[in-house]
Length: 263
Length: 348
Image (cartoon, rainbow over the protein chains, first blue to last red):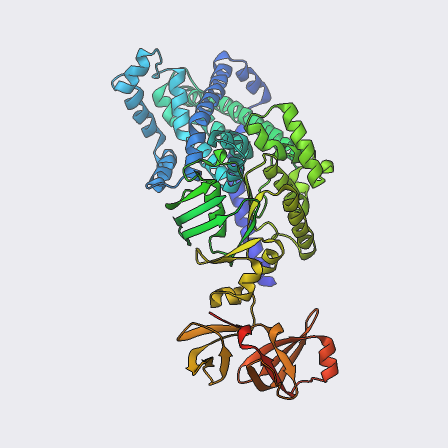
């Protein structure tokens, strides 16, 4: 008994230290500026438009990834083929490459010096210093969160459910859209949320693709290097607060919907 | 009606090997085998959900082997029913009609009919997660049968249920088949279930069909010791065929000689059915050629009879009625004679 109590105590202590480490800087940041300063900062056009831009770019990145990522996730969950492990490794790559390197790599493909970039440019889509570039950067670094979550979701659905659907006359596409996809709704939603949130916070890859238009993380960086801590911290606080609010709201909404369904 | 020829599929854990089956129209066909012998995969092959490595499947002469499942019109009910958890009972049942683009009025009409047949009107708006095992099964069957499939495949439909429900549902399946006459292939590991339902049985072992026939035939004349043991046959012995003049015997390892009628030679298995053996206190003078003396070593009460174990050099199981036991005053340790005809010995 005594031994177990010690074990619990030490583990709780370590756990609390970990939590303080996460919470302290955030609380300090959010409470560091007076409400008046925060409100006046929000009213700056440069600040609110950069926050809006950040949310919008990450949303677009997530939507594109849903279109391309769900088929990928489904294939990985359902089909066995040689080299599958390798592909699953490739999907995790964006997490381990330095994000500034990601930015440079994207620049080399989507810049006008490479044929891919030239084709897009010919079609009227440019990336460097553009909204589109921000979307690409956010998409690259955050898509593993979506693809992996959706893949796990598909894996958790008994393949026999789709087989029954087929035996009842459903084509492969019908079995996917009427059975697999709706059953994976929750994973798709939470994967999207994770990806979107991860995209919002991206700095390294974004700053290389597009310094302007300025996303919130870039704006914070610019204010810090040009004007110092005092001017950058209100913007940082606003970004953190907005993200938190949106995130909590979505989680609540999601949870509520789940609750109703379980009744 | 359904002809399966040389069907083969190699998988990681087991193989389906060279399956030949010929199932007749309206037949209730049971495939019986221990768990893990690939019975489910065989059904999935028939349904077209898994592709065979080799072999063909014909339906009334038309080859189905390459046809995708949605064009086969073969209904499949899995062991755990696999109701769609995101749809309610009604949506589950009408799924097959919806994906086929059947019009709403027609769907409603078919639904009404099938729902009445299964007596599940009261369940229609229910969430499938709150159904009992029996209700789930009825919904799964209704879902499979609403499209009027040409064959119904049932994968261990009764094994997930408690004994009481199981018996009830077994009856329901039988009734259903009598009513709809849908050709049915039912797989199970339970011999009694097979006995109760099957027109014919195929026994599967290690991915192969080892015997096919009517239930009584398989029970009375198993063609291998695996089948005999699996269907619960008693008194299986192994020995060598001896010919003495016109008479044939099987000599067991301990020297016991049992008179038989057979054309086989060398090592064989033999079965004496417990209900074919007579018990007496005196040697029994009759046309039966096997008569041995032995000691009653065990008496066990069964449901409708008494099971005696008589040691005649090998332990022989004998069934008698409780009435005979009382009347003859048989107790443990008494010496008795056992008698059975040579023609009652099944040699294989």
